[in-house]
Image 1 (cartoon, rainbow, N blue to C red):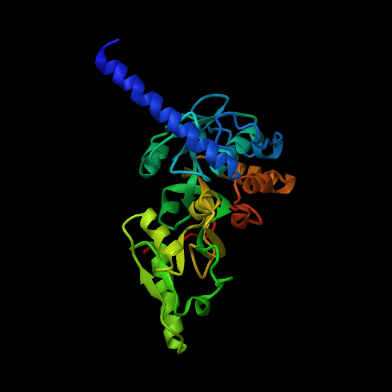
Image 2: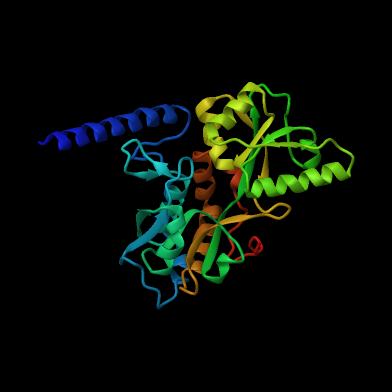
Length: 312
């Protein structure tokens, strides 16, 4: 073994050990990040969904449901303690859909920015990776909804703030938000409403990274942090110093849905919608969301190509 090879092996070994230690700590907080996923919820074959697949549709690999997923971090999708296996709510849901269709799941980890090209070029059958439905995306892709797109309002654990449900609840608060994000756009509209109603304006704060944002909340320099809901659910379980006091639809004032994306006109979307509704009816869907502490993001039913966020 050369010196360079030995060094590479030591580095890889250290990284795997680090992931294992981190994963063990996370699992103790209610999330199973083991590669085995012994607690994964399974689904029954859904013949109605299978019969809805277009006759001319050809899966990328016969007998398999090939799904792209971006492992951006738990609880939606991240790497397990072996630093190789992708686990989370989206992989669990993808596995349940595959079982509904009588297929074996083949997960393909991809960078989130790459999924549109990969789907269009036929590298995978579908994308299950927190993709929101928009009118612009609907021009190139079909969608089968499976979750609400939510942002979360979180405060430090001993905060006197107990609920944020509407604009007036934010009056006078110091709120951390990402610059140029959808949640910033919504909160600016909330602030306009508050000021017009004679309420105190809210103060938006911006930080360079997540660690600084969380420190600002825990130290009292800010009252609230607003980020994608799932991210904050995981951080709250990990750090034990913030709590949820409300959620915000990514499409406020309308609902914004997250969906399976498939190639436009491929003939698979309706089958996936039927499969999802079968999972909802059987209770498997709720169990998957509960397993990853995302029950707030549940949909009452799946739809094919519902109205999406408008073009900007």
